[in-house]
Length: 410
Image 1: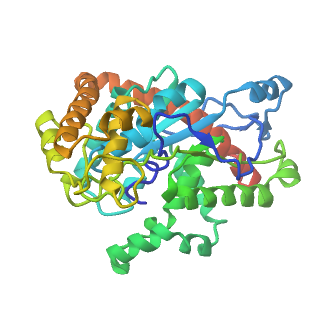
Image 2: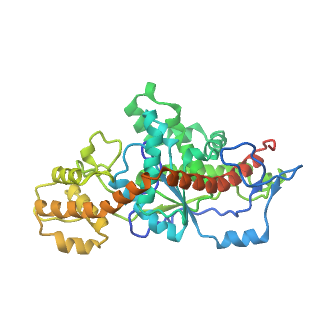
Image 3: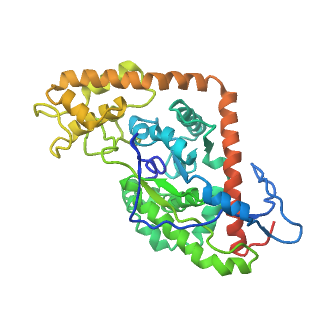
């Protein structure tokens, strides 16, 4: 997961997501301990009383907390090019989520360094990913868009959470075992083992109500929930109140936002493998910025089968199911409509209409991307404003944790 940390965090389609009913949701108010954080890249707006910590907990705030929209956080790594799977599985859905929830969408650049990477490309890829967010329809008047490393609280909270995370919890992470086995133990950095704690920090900092997750991310969300409950038990409640705090829970325990069936986009060369940035062959994916001739070539060469007709949900035909799903998602039509149109088609005809649909869908995004990237000042301002808003929320949570864990006031 080092190459898809929060990218699969949001594995959603354009259909309305479901909230997992099997996971109990923790509750927490939004009154925060406010202190001066000293010199920070994005100074907190809170002011401390000169002689003691201040815990703000007014009835007005409690009423506002009860009425506020639920909060969703997510992001994509700036490694490799953003592809159709990232878009259809995550980013495309953000445009509807931002109308329903309070949303924070960030570029998770700190996660991008858990495996070997090209340092000169990191900042360039980070800007490109942010521009793609906006080109795909993320509205900064509704959602905060920022870069993870621009809010230092992510790393600070990660260290605090690391102190209470049993090493056994990390050792059981399936994706760490798979990645480390692939890379070889001598070449694996400690960050690959501990990045689930950073992911937990990403979520818990913002008191997220809901976290969109795919199948391969459920274990990491469970770790986040366990860490939230562990910290609440160790330092929250009366213990926190004795330290001068509000008492109660320090972290909201987030719920999973479950994607609908069929939202997962698979490789063009293997219908059983997820479309991935890290796949060695570029032929396996459609990148959002691929020019028309490249899209034509990739669809023409993509793997199919020798069965007659086209159909969904046949386990013996994973490539067929995947390509029909992509067509359904980019056209916004129902499964039944796609079946009626395509069931008697041969591959040649279907590949042609799929190619046209992809080009028609991606062309406006590519045009908007060119507009955004041509104005560096605009993009810088978006990221700066987003980081300031995010830091305000993050610092409030972090300050509470520092207080509850017994640190000397700054």
